[in-house]
Length: 231
Image (cartoon, rainbow, N blue to C red; front, side, top):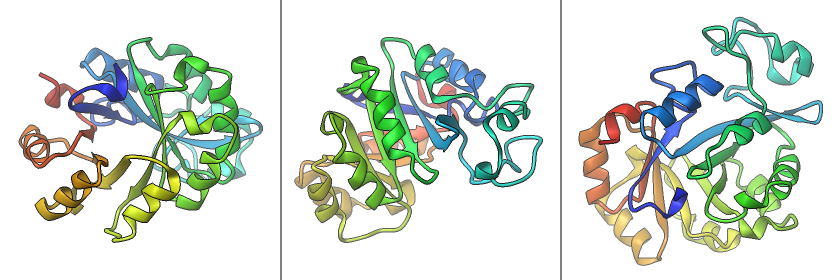
């Protein structure tokens, strides 16, 4: 179940290549396609965590402007694609089937504490059913130090290679790295695997590329097209 799977195919923002990303229909589609782990992104607006990737709403909705400039009510009346709302994290977690897991990426400012509070209200997620990741490694370090968040899987995200990855996983007391798939080389994977660290890579939409990465020791992939990668 979840991150225990031998090879993990993660629905990136749901099934972003098939249905408008980070919407409830997108997560439903990913599940119907066979995915059992899903990734999403959160911002903290008026004491609620909203699921959206960009720091503005221009690309993914019919609105314009910075996410943090909107009230919660104004965000919720936007069309996030095909008539869907921008969902709340709680709505996605209320839906999340028991055999599934979630990767929550901290995007907006100050998301760590409310994410931690949300997870503490859902003890069924306090294990291998939830991973929290971020490109902001300082924010991830602060999150890790919060009450009970030592029970949550965490993964620093990298879009550029950093030789300091080993120090970061030690600092976070984690054994996961989330990397851009273009960073993967045989030598790097050998060093990472030797350290006992698991690697998830983004964003892979080709079955051939997924197979190649798996053969190199990658543990799983984020994909916009779970329908193509799940046999």
